[in-house]
Image 1 (spheres, rainbow, N blue to C red):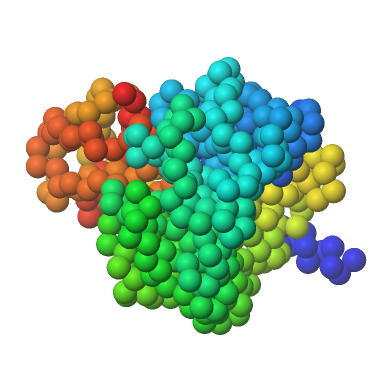
Image 2 (cartoon, rainbow, N blue to C red):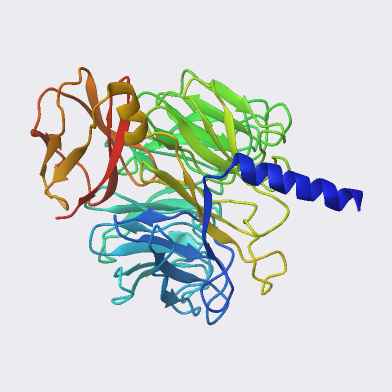
Length: 468
């Protein structure tokens, strides 16, 4: 009876402290999927994602849902032939959604596919297996010409590969076969790009067999190992890196003072490594995902730790200060627990998924949920500081090359424009000098971006879709 009372009190405290939490969907299994392992993306109207289990054949689905929790639609049931057990996230080029599955396909080692946002036009672009790598665990990225990704197995040494392929499924190139100690093995996350190099991490391999950070050029040359994880500086990263243009930021699943993971930053040349946080159970533990940035804070989730050891949502500044545990997932299961993906932000809310929990009894530990969490930044906070409303519009949207920003009350000094891609990387930053300023985004690839205008008093964010 005492244990039950304590759990109820923890739940009440957690809910009152985290009143900004809203559950958008309970996954239930066959009907709408179960146990998501990746992250959500947005096209400005719908959120899109995948689940590892559930659906007609219990091997995963692709779905979309509106940010208010309405309009759920199952776009595809995986059936083995068209893929099985998707573990990463989708990407968009403005016309198609692209993704990968861990199993399924002709060789049983996963597929690369594309599908229209309405669920039509599914096409299997590649069957993984053998020399081209197998069992992709992360997500794809695009430079507007090629799609890039990694596999966690097969290849020349059975340690995984880095590859690129054209969006129509032709032009496959094996850029690297991981070899273990020299360059890492078993990448579970995704690549990021700065336009010259691709950056990523592996779960194992390297000098201490605890994983590495690496970079490589998009043609497969110029491989460089930036860091060997050794336990103290982290170990076995399960997610991906993000960049703010100066530093790369990431997390590890193990390692650190308490051996349950760290948050770190490092320069793209491999210098300047700094451990920003040691997870210690109270503040979270074992993060299985990536960070995102909104310019001031880094946001992320840990799959364990917190008041009930069911995971947390947190924020931290890029210098390692101001860590805040924003949400503790609880043992009541109603609100979801054990998130292993990454967050998505529209500037007002954070959106995410949990692997377990929720109200469904069709899964032994719950089938997981989709949730959103309100941020304390935005126009309401800004107007309190300035005394006047400040907002901006973007046109055209979608856009191909030149976008114009119309800013209300353009009398604020030192306005900065930041553009982030779907996984939170800063891809463009400019100072704003006048209203109706035109920004050339011709160097950015098709997809969904977050545009943020910042001053010392406020931050305002909009969604931008680049489509050519």
